[in-house]
Length: 356
Image (tube, rainbow, N blue to C red; front, side):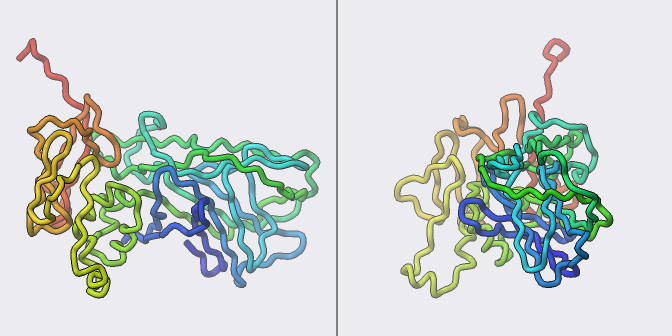
């Protein structure tokens, strides 16, 4: 995300190799970082030559919040043509020794563990958001006490939607504490008071599979398919199916002998030895999956009449014994014709045998 008028840009990078995570823009104008559960990340503010310059008694400061929570410190005295890195949650700040940080880590959002108030609009849930405020501040004296930090991280109350709302409208990820880092920090001794807000940047983050369910990612879109092919989410790879080859150019196909690559089986499904890609039957530990010839996207039908030893998963989580998976085949919400069926998880209804 960027604020061109301030010469500022916000990106999210992997801690492992420093590469930036891709960002997509929804039709409504929201920016989503394509993220994955378990990935550790850092937030980077890039200031170019157009970044604001203030008088000597003032400073430009940046405050970062993740899932609505402060990270325990500000970045101050920001200058043009600089890169500012938020390394994680600051757990303990030290004036003379190393300060302790815990990396930002994408983690599964489980409403049963992160319960908050019931909300009617997913926009009221703060999880899944990275917000940075740029502000102009004036010097108000010198600090006489040691620097303080006390961010905890991962404590955001998710909130929950009323019964009947589609599960994938709520965030599927939150940010928790990752590995520890110890850094020598030159903490600012000047105390500043906020004068004005210069601008606010917000990035949201979500898994590719959830964004597909929401209709923000479409495997038929070549640009989206390119992003999805780089995902390590098994659900995304299963949804791509045989369509992964549709965007492959003839030169690439000829380089590997003109043969189509076999589609990756769905999670928990074992491909029979010698099975062909067209009209092949694939055995799982329980039931059967039949791939029909001529259906794009590796369409598959699961025989639910057979015992299922492989757990049923919907929206990235396992369906529990007291729950059922429900698919709305009537398209009651008015989705576009031909859209994929929408699945949701509901509690099983108790049956009164005595009154039957």
